[in-house]
Image 1 (spheres, one colour):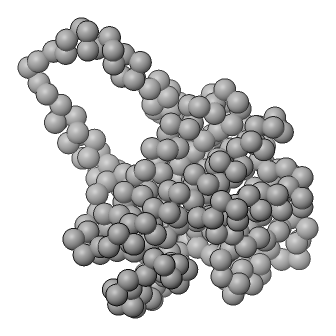
Image 2 (spheres, helix red, strand yellow; image 1 turned 30 degrees about the horizontal axis):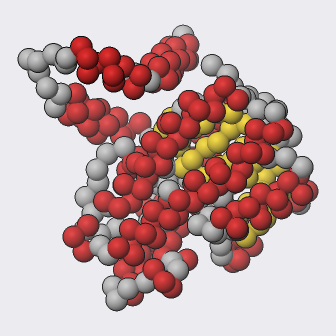
Image 3 (cartoon, helix red, strand yellow; image 1 turned 90 degrees about the horizontal axis):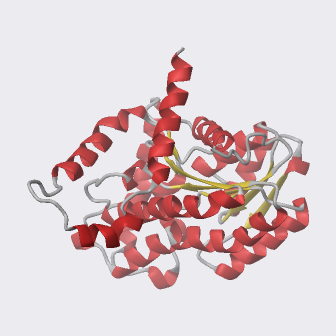
Length: 317
């Protein structure tokens, strides 16, 4: 298994949505490891607060305003990062938005907004950065922040879950495509980490608004206050801890970077429910199997499974 960025010191990382929350935690961990880091932001006040974490060594930090839903904004950010640091070796697609409520009460604008950021933003960044990652030939890694909620269904979070599940699948397919180019692909699925994502409607475009927006925004603000209480009680992972978990994943080219062991049961139950739903007592016609043969297996799953089991066994010895 190739590990393009085992040695990250001196390399350049671009982290979207990194002026607060998980993105800032990732940026700080990468900076601690000796990387040059490009932060992207939407809220100036958050950036000013974020920069305090990088001390006086500002030569290794650069900030750029970025709207990941706007391809022109992403292209400009790529050019700016290369202008400042020369190259980019690690792309972290972290920017994301969140809103919660029953699907029966959701609007098309809710769907368009979350999908445009959580999935469309990932695509825009991959499309813009990939030619550069291939061209410099020094090895690279793409990490996308999804969510544990993209691995199973959560009540009143249908659109968010769908957007994160789609991002996971996009990265799973992309990993196989880019492996021969010495570009690793990872998907980070965090559990409960303190983040400003609970107040992400502050950047919701005006054209995405509807009559329910005011009430939804108020609930999100209250949600952020509740998140702060949970963080202070120790119930939420600190973003820097999450960032260090991502760093380990980059250094090992892990396919899946999972941070919270307490989600094992629900993930296992979903997998078992799928397996239990396969037809029994019947065999597939040979002609159909022949046609489907090229898509019936993805060796990457068994390779990653066996590699992680081997690494886990070595850790226990």
